Image (cartoon, rainbow, N blue to C red):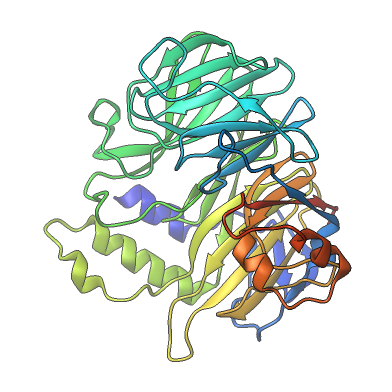
Length: 395
């Protein structure tokens, strides 16, 4: 796949450079991260102005296995639990209100819910039904308004405005969309007229069994800007309802780029033995979370004799600033806000970043913070996860 290799080798102009936690605004197109820097943590206070914990009420109707996503739902909190196939609505204080829709074969039910997005202006909820290869559309009362079939496998969804959604299908094979020996990984689906626009093509020789999709390759804060990650090229397409706004490239240095290009070349070779590829040799981006203030990217360096290093990168599309932290094994973020502790970042909505802490982790915490002590009161290990709401601030 020559086009993919060329896109790796031909740099777009530079958009921002990062030196430790400094901010350097450069020219357009490239986010430069110097992975040769010594270990250094970002501070939570660099990213957030406030952090809040919400105990989600635990009842027989509101049990949560894992929180995959949280969305502001008309002032309430919509929690997506893919393991339990549940969409659970809580008020802002964590009191359970009701379930939205449900799994089944009847009208308005989904067969396998994989992702959810919200159109706040139109007061609509979009549910990606991966098995039915459809998008179900509900109003804010939970009534099913329509079902739109797109007809291929996809497992991530974002609403980009203008009655359009972005879909990520990873490395699944789509025979109907093959073009010049390549197939797309992302699609824009127009819910109004059914038009499907594929993009980010990869070589057909790359098999789904050879490369894993990131945990999240789509990110949005709900402000009409959606980020689509190509983890083979480290390019991020920025989409809006009009189409492609621009493309950013994550640059981890010349040596890392060469290693990644060599890896892609191996993937493209016919009859290769994937087991012979050996350990990961380049930086791997495994998740993104979008907020109004910045895109938060999590990545991991290749393993060496000292182990792997984790990277946490915050990039502002508004001013081109970028700050990041790097740490071997541990979280590359110092939790310096009073009452804060490590939490899993899962989704963004407006200026809020959502995450959660499992009860057993909170109960085992030795922090002497009064905030955490109060959270522990009456908490049981089998209670619902504790929701974390962090208010982001401009970089």
